[in-house]
Image 1 (cartoon, helix red, strand yellow):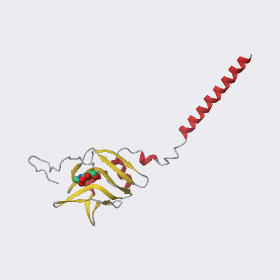
Image 2 (tube, protein in one colour; image 1 turned 30 degrees about the vertical axis):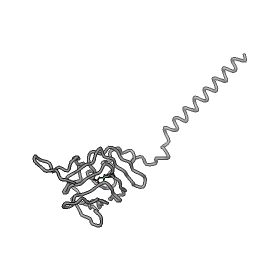
Image 3 (cartoon, helix red, strand yellow; image 1 turned 135 degrees about the vertical axis):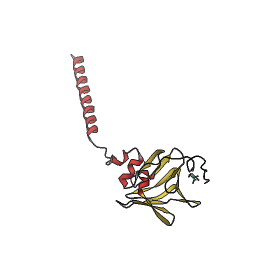
Image 4 (cartoon, helix red, strand yellow; image 1 turned 90 degrees about the vertical axis):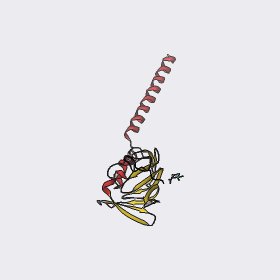
Length: 174
Ligand SMILES: *[C@@H]1O[C@H](CO)[C@@H](O)[C@H](O)[C@H]1NC(C)=O
């Protein structure tokens, strides 16, 4: 008699525990994570797809991005597989780590990107694009220049050497 009562209460206990776990489980599934109210930007895995969300063209970054981090304040770090050269209207160098701060229509505090001006490499410190504009403005130190946005539409293929391409083309020294 005593043992069957024990068994019964044990059964009740298990049943209560089981339903408690069940309900907390389903609650967890339904509730959005309060720590990540907007997962839309964080869930983008290709950084090139992130750029249009900020009103910038996808092709500002080369195709050999390994990973990136983006903070809530727009600060980002992008890691490339290797340093990279891209021939836009001018030759651009991307170091393996690129840092900066994203805001709508612009990137500021950039490090890790350089452009070749005549014979010298200058650091690109920022980029800006007005909504609907057909050009991207690049800041190199105190100067800025506008380049047609068209060449930044597609993600450029990365070259590991500053080679002009084509047979017999010389390799530019950096
Ligand atoms: C690339 O970044 C590394 C580490 O910050 C730096 O030491 C190196 O000089 C950079 N390369 C160029 C060509 O700027």
